[in-house]
Amino acid sequence: MLSAARRRLLPLPVRYIAAAFSTATATATATASAAADPTVFYLESTCALSPAAAARAADSIRLVSPDSTAQADAVLDLLRRYGFSGADISATVRKFPIILVSNPTKTLQPKLDFLASVGISAPLLPKLVSLSPIVLHRSVQDHLAPLFESLREILGSNARVVTALRQMPFVVRCSPKNTLNLGLSALRDVHGVPPGDVSRLVAIHPGVCFEKDIVTLIMRRYPPSMAISGEKIKKNVGFLVGKAGLSLEDIATYPNMLVRSLESHSRRCAVLALLRKEGKPEGNHRVPVVLVATMERFLKVYVQPHKIEIPDVVLAFNGEIPFEGFGVLQQPQQLGKTSL
Image (cartoon, rainbow, N blue to C red):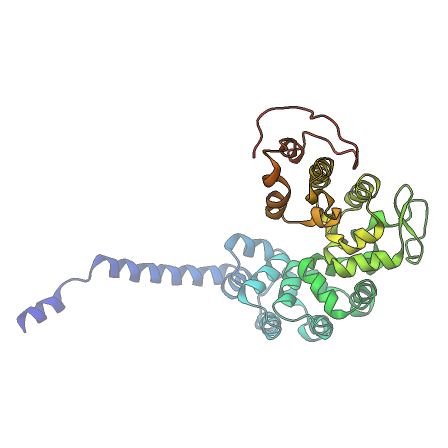
């Protein structure tokens, strides 16, 4: 009994005193912050913004009255109903603070309803909005509906549009008029075909044209092709058709060739040309299949088994034997140690 009484009378450990002091200090700081700038306090406490981000956001909005905070609360409630997490809300508010002073019913909900109507739901919907929150201030009639109509024309269905947006969420902020040109500036006639005339042949290289049907097929099979720069398309198609001897149908069948680097294509073709010259069966594999193979498979099938008998395959793989076309081989540009 005595020892128990003594224990009750012992002073509290320092850590408990420090914790109590820290809690009291934090409470006092929060109270002072709220009194100094209620907008910053709201952004920090409700939207999880950092002090610096909250201070920047407070330059464009003011939440100083019960009505304004009630409207901001209604906006956050609306976003949560559409599957926005705390992190999504924080990212959205940080990029676009005026969303908190937007009318949740008249301004925001119609856009969210439209996006949901075309099959975009959480987690993709919050991702799209948090990356491009300005979309919630765009007109459904003048922006979103025409944009998705253009995308459906290219890709064929809402489901394919959603698949494309998962890979390229930035598309939602593009102008509807430019959607068909997106990533495909090289797929238009460089000699003056009107931008809206997508039924015409599209020139990408001297003597090389894609018809609209092939362009549509490429984009349906490989939606990321919309994000490839025109210059890269020109260079890749010029090489694939001009040097590697492929057809436009080959490219439409294996459209992911367009995203690979020109250097990778050239080195792989140089290896394949050597194997053909030496009479190896792998040399007769279809060129598109070789070009889209993973690096692991390419090394396993086309380089490693032959590097002792045909050392030049290593040089070709390292870019030391330029590819000038099948049936045309140059001598190595430089000799030395290789990485294989």
